[in-house]
Each structure stands twice: as C-alpha cells, then as structure tokens.
Image (cartoon, rainbow, N blue to C red):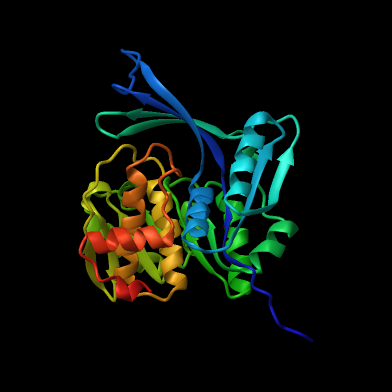
Length: 314
C-alpha cells in the first residue's frame, strides 16, 4: 500500500469568516450616547481566515474550511479570500441563511474598538469528508474554538494524520476545556487565560494551562504589553515595536498567522514571537483586520529598522 501523503498546504483553517463593517468614530458609542461615523470601510475578517491571509502574504499556501450564505455578503467574503490566493474549495455555500458579519467601531483617537457580531452561516459549519480531504494535505491546522464539538473532531483527525493543531480562541465557552486537550499550540489572549484560570495573574495562568493540558507551546498576546510564553518551564516575554496605531482589529489573528509561518521555518520560539509581533504591529497602522498585513520582505525591513538581526529570519 502506498502511504505517501501529498502536502499541498502550509496551513488549513476551519472556522468563521466574516465581512467586517469598520465604523471609524470619534468616540465609541454607549447605551447613553450615540457615535458619529466619520468613515465606513468594508474588509474581510474572522480569526482563522485572517490568520490564513497572513500566511499567504508571507509566502505560504493555505486552504479554508468554512460556511457562507448565498448572499451578497458571502460573495464579497469569498471574492476577497480567492484574491488572496486561499483555496476556498472547502467553503460550503448555503441557501436561505445570512452570511456572518461584524460591525466594529474603531476610535480614531485611540485605535480601540467595540465589536457587534452576527454569527449567521457560521453556525452551520461542520467537520465533514471534504474537510478531511483538505486537512490531510496540510502541515498545520488552525481552529477558532467556536464549535468545540466539530473542532475536536477536526483536531483528532489532524493528529491521526500527524498534523499539528493551533488554537486561536478568544472565548472560554462550553466545550473549550475538552478542546484544549487536543491542541499542540495554544496561542491566545490575556483575557482568555484569565477566563480559564479565574485569576488575574498571567504568569500563573500560563503555567496552569500548560500543566493541565501539556501542549507543545503556550503563548499569550498582551496587547501593548507584548507577548509572553512558557518555554522549558520558564516565562519569556517579548516587547512591542512602537508604531502609530490606527486599529487593533485582527492583530491577534495576524499574530497567529505569522507564528505558523515561523513554526514552519523552524525558527527559535523567541524569534518567532518577535517576527509575529512585527507583522501584527505593521497591521496596526491600518484600519481593518487585513489591509496592513505585510509580505515577508517588508517584514524583514521593518525588523531591521527596529534593530533586529534579520539574518536569522532568512
């Protein structure tokens, strides 16, 4: 029997893909006071799909497994993904269901944001035979944790085929704890760690999740405080690169995509963290989750300008 497995994708993602309505406002609205929209921009979004766009722009090859409605929003989402070069054959198109979208208010003064999310077609996303066919031709699988039952099925299948699994998860929901047992790379947010551990100490939270689930690596992104990892039992921190921030939408997702790229290059973990920080920092200088994502050459130039030895990234 021929056990040769044809690898076609550096990374495959199973997860939500959206259309983001980016509303640029002077002040973010509250229930007491409305916001005046200065500008409106439409860009594709979603944790997993934005991570894949990042891998593509850095020079990788990716595929997305998702679900969209047969509507204009879905068509816009699909067109943008195809233009990025992502294999979209794993995206199911459903009739009589609205595609997923988000309204995101972005403060033009602070770069901070508030998100209203409509799940729509993403609720119908399933792990199926088509997903199996795509995943088994991949090096890495990335999940968003929004459907723990389906994600567990996908992660188990990936491991059966010697494929590593990364999680880009922002919410600790029912089923997340079970999913974490099947994840190799937990790259998550500070708030997720706090929800998991029920305490406000990032170091102890990082150690707790590592001890309980024993992943290959745990990294937490800390916004303007940089990122932190547990490497060989020791806490390691990497700072930020100072840039003029316009919008933090998608920064964590971009970090995940750049981290996957670094893992596939077999770089040192600290160097991967620096590289991912650089890529997400460059994104921050633009509105929307994707417009500012750089290519590999521009990322190296950015790193060099910020005093890093770029020879280790070549």
